[in-house]
Amino acid sequence: MDKTKKFFNDVASYSGSAFFANILNFITGVVVRKIFQPAMMGLFSEVMLIFDYARYSQLGMIESLDKELPYHYGKKDHKKIEEIKNIGFTFCLATTLCISIAILIASLFFKITTDRLLINGIRIISLMIVFRVINGLYIVLNRSRHNFSVISKYTALTAVLDIGLKIFW
Image (cartoon, rainbow, N blue to C red; front, side, top):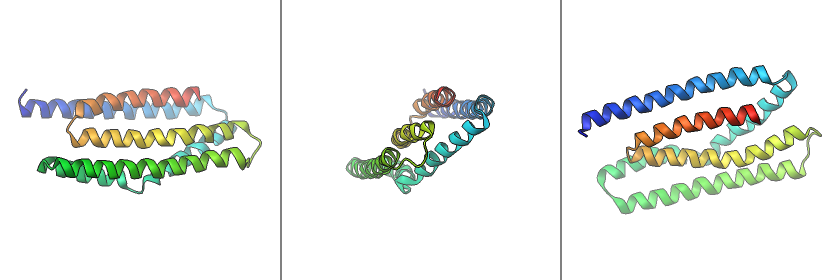
């Protein structure tokens, strides 16, 4: 396949999967608000707030990898690529595991409320934080290798799993 055709195929599949994911996210938002009662929606919002703030636990390392890896792939500096990947992945996973374990410990020992749903939601979120960082690392690694078809499929799959987890939580 020539480069132009591959480029347009990648753009179409990547854009299509992003569009599909956005539509599913919109549907998820509407369905979740229809299914949950107001009190349950408040609990869901609290738990999702923790999940959203935990996005910053990797302190911008994923964005740095997103910048540095393609540059060194272009230079074909494989030794530097492995060094950057190892440092970045280790840092991301170490900081994320620390945050996740701290959230889990807080849910076990500091029972702020007697509401079991909130406590169980926080425990589940502590695990999902790790999966979110692994997800980000996987996308960055494939993007730097120009594997957009893999990212497209993965984005669509993640959107479907997201709607399933939020609705059946």
